[in-house]
Image (cartoon, rainbow, N blue to C red; front, side, top):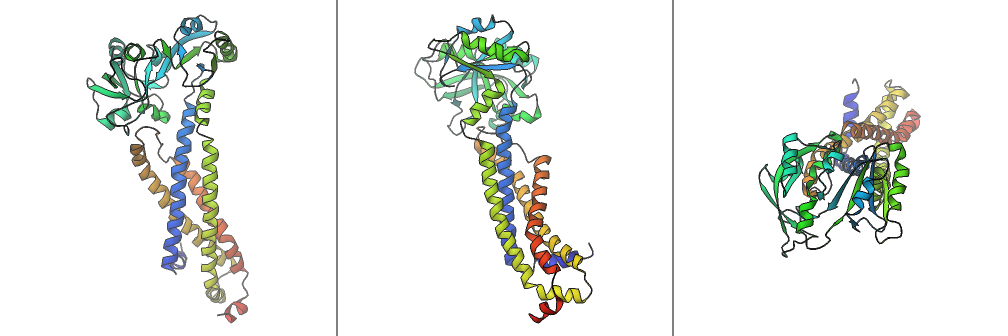
Length: 387
């Protein structure tokens, strides 16, 4: 703290240069905060995998439907505890920009996903008893101001009704929350009865999108998966059964390796940041070489000079980095609102801040160490001769 005023004076020696450098650092760490949230959001999809659940989908494509007749055959297999099913609906509320995940599900779907959805017993009973009932996540209900008992019209972007209309009408009977706070993305979903969907849609009757199989012993998942796939071998609806975790990874992989993409972007950003801030720091130190010579003459040791320059470089990066991470924290709720539920970005948590602070310290050390070592080794006479 004794020499803080010297560090501060050195930072603002060239105000315009410092401001532009801070803006560059702020932008880099703003990108880090946002992109890390994207990575965590996609990883959360992978974490939805619950113990002992298998997903049965078409071997050809996830969008290829399967016959409902497979249900009883799967249920009778040894080691199978429960079987649920679901179908992607793809509806939107009032306008296409108001898109969010919505599914037609079997009566026992919420039972199989009891570790994911938290719904009161009264609301669950109402959902079971209401033919056109729907339950929604708390985030979606808050976003549109929906209340229990309200009628919710969705526009079927994929499935029209038998009468040619695209509008499907649901009665909101329940609002669920995420059983695990880390998986709040599920609060963007809307679930309704597959039977209502099957009765009303203009085509694809008696077909579902995928099955969810709860097994008695996860250790036997491979054997059960193979048995399920044998049920439809050489048919026009061959299946691919895999763990829920593998299914989620395969689904996300269709969009690319998000971790690799994010890592590549951040590597490019921080490499550019090192070049920019390193050049700025080196130039700033070169301008003050005679001043450091005078400071040595007045009794400042080599360690003092080294510490002052490193404190300046680290302080510069910390100011810009903390500001960038702070802006990311503020922007994420706005981005989530703009995404309309397509993707729910998590807030910048303590883990992200910890990684960010380590990066700030590392960048500050890297850009400051060479100028600091050079200044520490200055020959006083030679430095003053060049003044």
